[in-house]
Length: 360
Image (cartoon, rainbow, N blue to C red; front, side, top):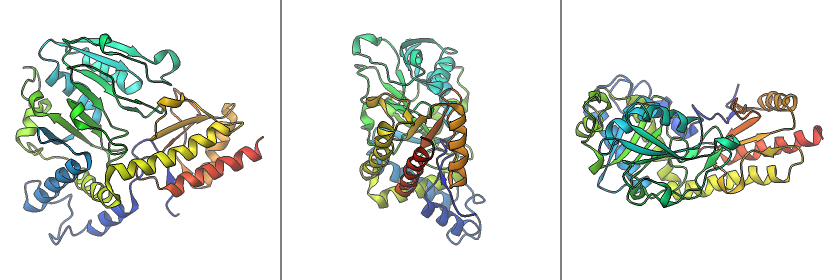
């Protein structure tokens, strides 16, 4: 069977050129006679890998010098605890905006370590929009404000960042990091699981302003202290070496394409093809309000569960896979991350048009 167009929300599709390089280097990484999965994380060969990955990520996101870049184990879910353990330490309280399943989990974890104030929530409409906020809604004494910049399950994203005054914004950027341009200086901390837009599962990227490091709670385990990893260059222990290597290849691929601005342009075009069809369709419907629509995750539904199931089966048979939506939304979801080629979205839209003709 040839490669399919994989619309999975994560682990997600990876760029074919990246996979081909990894395949070529799998048995002998740059003349070492070993796989990158076998070489020491303190060797000269791996030092070059991790240092270049960080340098390329700094270039891609224009990360200021006063921010540390960390490559950590555990994915984004570990950050739900690491963030409050390290940042909820001055006034023991933080503001959160609830926009979906992942922010709910972050809120629940934050409550274990201090006072959490849910400033706003879109749960009243099954998280199909981003709630409006203003500076007066945020506590100026909060240690941070936590947001989920893009909501994978519900297909929503912030049209603009909330105005939190001087309170640092912490963003879970797992599903749109490197998919659109952000000004890193507007954040105190950004974290992202790798398995959507960066590489294989098992790694989290953390970008943290230096003044926020070094204030961890006494109860924070050594491995959950950002200072531990910042001081050790992400190699306090054996890091997720293969995930870092793959991320580095993805960063090189993105740079060759013209960086994040060029990638965002492609992503917005891909998303527009889908949304334009959904807005004109007589049987397919977008589940998200216009200005909050994600360019990474596009949920949509048909009039009934039977048609949804039929669509998913026929699409899979046509090589358009992993389109089933999350159980809390139903229907379908097309995740069109950076590595989803435009041809894949074009094929999906063409298939949807024919399905509508056949079932109207």
